[in-house]
Length: 318
Image (cartoon, rainbow, N blue to C red):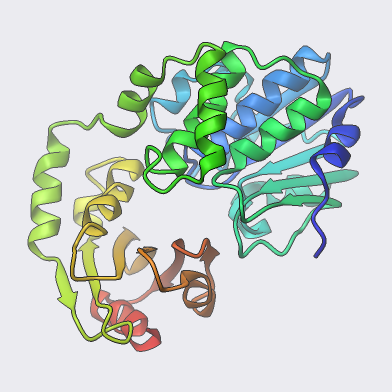
């Protein structure tokens, strides 16, 4: 797969009269921020724009407050324009119920930064060296000649600040992009707090219960160690998706483990597994062996069965 350039993608989108922008299932700030930033830009160029995501979980409330949220449409109301753009989806399956909208389009574009993405559009702008999809969208907007105002910058910043863990694992270029976006008017302090540092009080009890059951397997990963925690369906059903997803950022801090895993039971015996590594372990082949994908140090996959069997399958693959 040869990645298209941002210039080629900009040329494809410059004169579109209508476009559908699709975000991935269980949307995060990078997919929604990228989608809304691109949508705002194309709207200002005169295109008819709709932005949508698979309606399997509710949109996290901070994301619904991003500028451009007016462009979001419910999946049942998606028109499906002749040109469709996928943002931050590592594979076609990540579009879930909206896959049919993508494959039915006359022209398709993917913009993504996942190393596991082999490309599934007519034009694929894929760069695993990018910290987030938002910075790739910024390159497209620059090639389109669109001014990066406060609204567009805020959407891009949402993707940047979250996918870099508040810049804890950001590349130097991301700091330069952040400075540019803040200069454009982003209230970085307010959005960082809203996106990363706000939890309902019930979250504390959930975290205490889940961490109390965490396990350390010191011999895993050739002695690098694995720490894992299980969030069962009863616990997960009492919170939002993003509250359950946030557990991995706590578990990964264990000094004794190179790899962290959190098993989240989204339905009885149906699991979403989040993986993180620190330095040496490439998670992409591990996730791929279980039907998933992602980045070298942040990947995931789905599995099914009793918790002990799902955990055992991961341990057996490390």
